[in-house]
Length: 137
Ligand code: GDP
Image: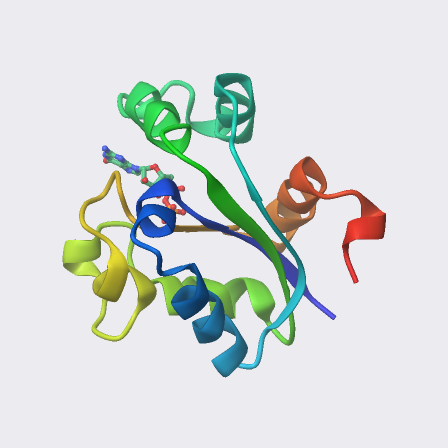
């Protein structure tokens, strides 16, 4: 069964919509195999987003991701990675399709409510970044 990593970012956690977002996953047929609320350190955020280290928005992205707690979740189901990406909507909420998580809960391209793995290979690495095998059930 395919797995993917979701992060509910600090903006959505602060808005108290964690339950609403997790329900979107469940309503779409994805199962929550693991979940926890954590405060990322600067080193955590820099390591997680290392692929974007050279991008002009990297510093803002790291600062935003450590501005408050996040909820990290392993989602499981058929085509979990692409299903989650469809539920999320476009990176820029202004361009996100109506009914997507980002269209409904995100404010800006920085504060865009959720992260989701963008390939099955990245999902495997991102899941092991946050979770021990015994935490995934
Ligand atoms: P995602 O997979 O849809 O989250 O998008 P990316 O992997 O391309 O980018 C990672 C995160 O960096 C996005 O979710 C945004 O929060 C942020 N980001 C991406 N592009 C930009 C940009 O052009 N400007 C700013 N400020 N942030 C960006």
